[in-house]
Image (tube, rainbow, N blue to C red; front, top):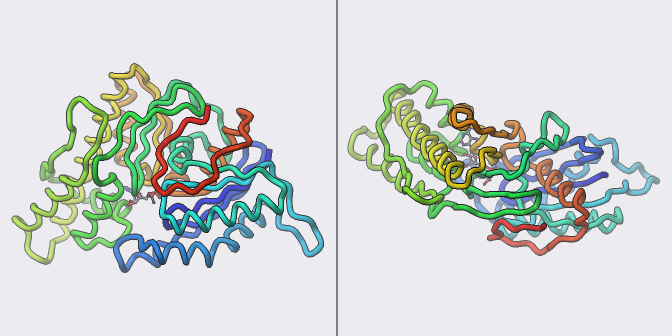
Length: 344
Ligand code: KG4
């Protein structure tokens, strides 16, 4: 089984080749440098950058997988060309769809539309470069990215129920906004994690637990940081202040994600958790979640750090799951606000 996958939902242009359960290539062109000066992703710039880079990224993925056609050679054969059909930025998604459809036509392959969030949910199946069929269903999913924070219940492959999502900001978005408040640059997650390691005083920012449901809310936490800065800090923050704010903010986000995951385990009786998405690159969060889940007798599958942020390898895995289950057809319309959907 050979799959070419394309990812263009936000600010990463990605292409990956999956063959015989092995990720042969996973090329990611990050647009971070382009969006940095705006402290966030500018949709129009993102679409243009995808357009400029997509063919090069695909060629690199084919080259690395030793599939680049020579002057007279035919296009390589693929069983499917998959692409992220949403959720994401409309213009960015269009670029991925057109590229995938063109490749599918030339390669005589099925065109498969994949939900980017399903890719994050399944990304822990990639162990080093191999797909490992290690998920034990039923399974909870904690998907934490720049645009989404969601808890899912998956009873079997391709069957998904949304338990809860964020009412306002996603966790990654909160990292980015808090980093902006304290002038740490973009994206906020990695730099806040670094500063947090030097912090020690917990400033006790609120934990948005919202008892009794599976929903999240991070905008109040971001506002609490803004009020703390207004009421307690001078214009120029000292290194100690920065470190303590990052430490306290990261603690509050982590406590909330861990609390909700344990609550979902208790309420559903499902003790296996798959955790993916850009924020899952955070070592502190992983460590705390792991300890909490293990202490309840549960099991957690984490994605490798390199598969945490948007990438095409996880899209290839989601397509592979469908093909394994005989699903060679899927919805191929782009859907910027796509919700999780079952395909089984
Ligand atoms: O999955 P992703 O690429 O999704 C979207 O583009 O929506 O995730 C990007 C998000 C950003 O908000 C970024 O700040 C966050 O993941 N992130 C982190 C870390 N690395 C990336 N958040 C916390 N700690 C990190 N180490």
